[in-house]
Amino acid sequence: MSSFRRANLHLRAKVLQTVREFFVSRGFLEVETPYRIPANAPEEYIEPCQAGAGYLHTSPELCMKRLLCRGYEKVFQICRCWRDNERGRRHVPEFTMLEWYRADSDYFDLMEDCRGLLEQVVRTVCGGTTLTYQGSEIGFGTGIRRITVREAFARFGGTTVEAALQDGTFDEIMVTAIEPALPQDTPAILMDYPAALAALARLKPGDPTVGERFELYAGGLELANGFSELNDPYEQRARFMEANDRRFRTGLPPLPLPEPFLADLENLPPSAGIALGIDRLVMLCADAERIDDVIAFTPEEL
Image 1 (cartoon, rainbow, N blue to C red):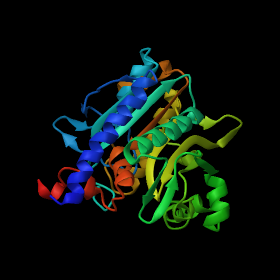
Image 2 (image 1 turned 45 degrees about the horizontal axis):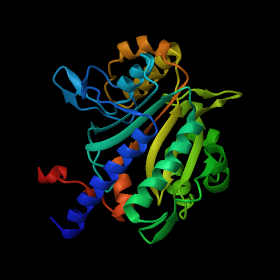
Image 3 (image 1 turned 90 degrees about the horizontal axis):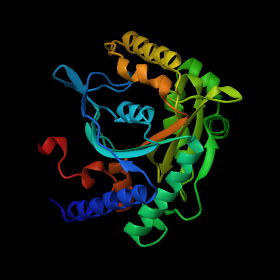
Image 4 (image 1 turned 30 degrees about the vertical axis):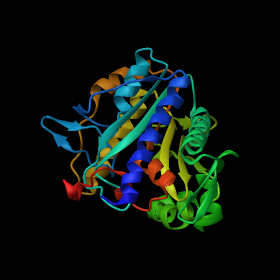
């Protein structure tokens, strides 16, 4: 093991400890939910790993929301997740996810959580409110810049969101034009995704063309994906079935629907929830270009 990777494992432990302290100090309950479940949330581009008669969870989202349905108000979890066929400079099939959910909240509350969490982690791990990632100095003490997806396409994409969705270039433009144009000297939030990409987010009151969903970036790394949660079981079922239809049309097998989750969903209070990649947060703090440099073992070493 290289000295860089060895040092990063110590840094990783410090990041995890700081994350736990952040949430516990704010009244969140740390929970553990099952790793093997009968069904994940069907998604077009995420392939779950089969585990006997069930699947390893791609995210603890469904079980954590069911806890909110049972009266828990603020919960967080740090756990392993699995997504098949994901391997690259920033991806491994087994990775560590931080998720937190809060009742009586919306995605603006999550944005404030993100601001405070990043500042505390960077201050604790790096000893100040700035760090250098891959040659760019990033400040974490002055807030997070926000830009809507619609504004980003108009400024950097050279087209509209509607046109990009229609001709199938939305994801390509996002990766090649918009993400590289986001601020490099501060964290950035890309918010209000088109309704067709709302996933598990509720539509925006007053503007149902977009969902209350955002993604958090820092130093060019996509760190987190947050929602004001959809709590309409009929709308959620329809979105899952649409995702399965898209999988079928692209040659992928449809996935089972999470029926107990859908049954509980009508009891979900107005809520917000978010997933943040711990490995990428450690990459940021360690100035590591590859995820391999911040994990104990790569898949190829097993």
